[in-house]
Image 1 (cartoon, rainbow, N blue to C red):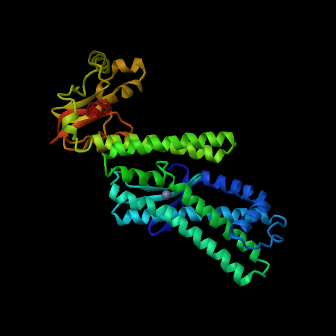
Image 2: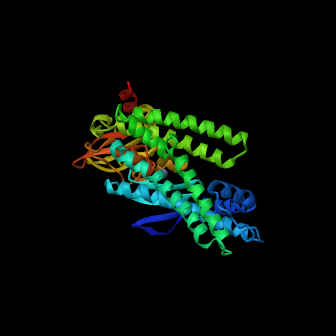
Image 3: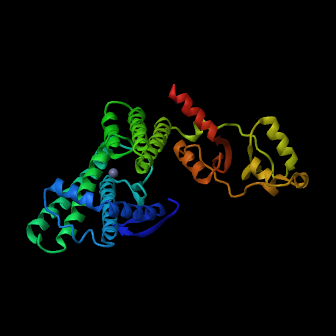
Length: 377
Ligand SMILES: [Zn+2]
């Protein structure tokens, strides 16, 4: 992800921090620090343990505690993501990295169709881990209370562990809400996918997720809670993106380039004047042509290549002067989903199809979209 830098590696998985994470820590620290007394009351009530607040309310200590607790919260988020990653890896899924962001953590996994059998335990382990961390923190509260309640630091430690205990249990509850793409939503999809095709299960789970996003957004506006608005936004976007991605992967499963490509292809020679290419573009309504020299593909010329030249220069130029030479080509057996990935990674709209060095067709983004539309019927 752009704007991230690496802080280390756990279980061989690179851990990245996004710059938004660095903005949220001081904000959290300030919020926690400025509400220290009401929070101490709350912790006292929830755990029914006495807290000596004399030290935690002194000077800058509330804000230092704020930083410690924010970092502790994100350590909890990291453990949650690591749990997902470890279970995913046991199922043979490759984990590229874990990134800590403003709204939590994201584990970047290998792309592909989610398998409901794998997804269920993978999604569940995150919230379960958060619950476990919350309970361990709560355990420390009682341990400190029973062993060292007279020590001056006891109030500080009870406050930190008490706070982190509550936060991790909130993390557990919040993640279990069936708001796809959060963990609870993934559990829901895995359950639905046992009874229906994956893309329908995803659509239902995503629609419920979007419903949650709208409710969160309304609550966020009414109670002026920017964090909730941000979460609503990410859930909505995530739900939409995942629906489209899964729809494409499902509908294009087993579809090969050979069956969607356009052929025969209109090709041009490297020596053709650029003005002629523009005429051919107008005549055929194609925005790019493979360039073929004695049956061998040597380049591709597109509108973008032509536009780079000024109109005056174009008159004197030939295709070989403007064409793109390092061509990306695919074979007729290439899965169409790979082609889509290639197109978005390289930001190209058309790819020549080559069989034993000879050009046999061309596949464009719109060819693939047409197939998706037809398959949806
Ligand atoms: Zn999770």
